[in-house]
Image (cartoon, rainbow, N blue to C red; front, side):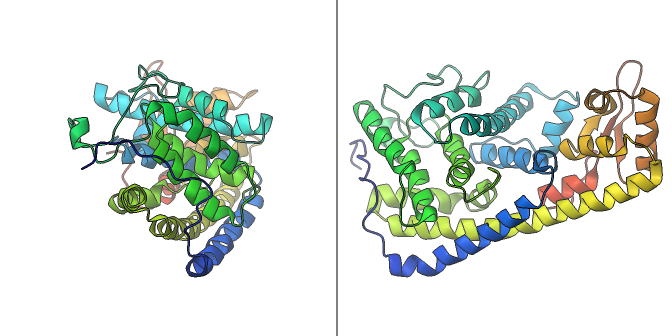
Length: 374
């Protein structure tokens, strides 16, 4: 194997067979357009889609080796204790979610993705977790490589561009991401792969590269909210994901990568559409139940708190609902539990608040039946 660092291909990529890509491009556009139409109909996406954002953070981080689940994150935030290793994983996931929210705020201030934004997001992503001491928020100035754990550079699977090539490659990448191209989803496939190929940071490149996907679709106006995540597909097809990326650097196979990426967009858009519809229907159904059960002006605020965090303490709910009494909130929660909508996973004792779970919402978000008490 050659030990030479890779030199990124010039952008845009000119070797693509557009005729063979026409059908998947059309399907990708149609699937995402349908999904975005649904996003537009959601009155409070920040609340209703919050669990999906956390699940994206879980799955993207899992690709990099974390083991924590969606429930673990919410339980941790509700005050549950975990081992040192579990704690470390959960904090990395929480940083990922914080980076997603931070990215949206940055784009609202300056509606283009730029290199300084990448450094700001990288700073958030690695703050206080593994990799924090690896030039956090700075493009690398040393050679890195990708290989098995404990491998030397001689055993590397891939050696990214040398440090002197990083900034020129990033400048070209920045121009490309902010240029008008023939087809947005091809541009997205290329910019994601090129970012991973440049590997501009010493750590966190994979996660940051996946964060850029919804940001780009938001920047270009394809999405009305930057809520479109591919980590579920990439995690389920992890070997193929890496294989297709290596196909670019080993065989110049951009066609294979782009086809894989378009299929990911199509499949995930369809899954996301079904999931968001289910979450929206659950919200409407539960809102009607809650109003009928409680006849309280604080019922909807309580429900919103449960949708934002489907595992939450009564104390957290109180903090989100100003101007009410603790007894009022506890009465609403008691009626929700009696109706089988929520369940207590930890009873309060002394100053410690009770912790409640909303199993149906967690199961919808996870895409599988889970037991929150495990």
